[in-house]
Image (cartoon, rainbow, N blue to C red; front, side, top):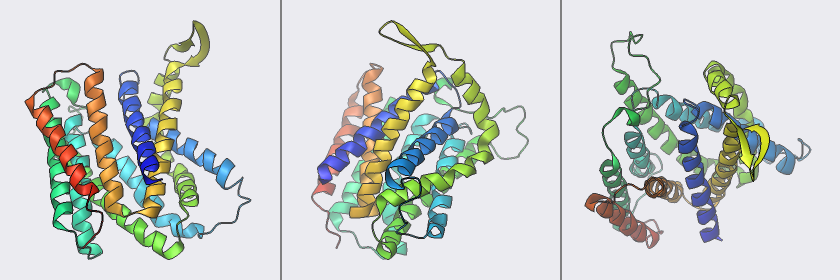
Length: 318
């Protein structure tokens, strides 16, 4: 069961990331639009199949979701916003891979968790492996910088890059805290992951009004893409929306898997799965674009696999 859930989660998360990377080449600055679409998709699924149009009684009071909704939405928006502040994508991946160490540190501080030596070494080795692999793939150039900030109109006496780093750091800490808070939430209210997935996404939707002006250019750009053609038949549907729908399907699989894992295992174990997702996303993207595989890629990949093996044999917290 656990292996199936982990496999589904990795497949969904990796597919989602690959789709986002591909769509970004056609529709620039579309992350908020993609995030909004995936929230609508997941909420609609929950409304139909879980809530049955609000006819199924809640197991958890709706007001109890407020804190999770606020943190979840803030983390998503902070990540999307950070990429507009002169943050090149490899650095973004490196920061996200730091979630493992952050989760372990906050687990020690907030929940007084104690980790055995194998777990500590495994987390450090996996994190180091992703950093090595990412840096080995990085080639300096404008194409690696996803900045939506016009340097000529930037009047704040702080470089955009510093603002981006602060946003990533904030998101990193908040994301680790969210994982630990969800453990407490499940202990208090029970493990109703389907309900939680629905309400967290459904209640977050109104907050997207805050970034509505930013989403509109991407919305119009998506509508302007050529219509999708399959087997020589013109579907009339703009191709970008077909890709967004596919991303939503992958994201749904990823999200559902994460919520299922969160209900049955610790935040650190879930974070390990999501960190491996980032590595596999890099690896698949690497082969798709036929980039040369050098010695440092081999070392980085070896670190990740060795660290994963160490982690897999040390599930028991001391």
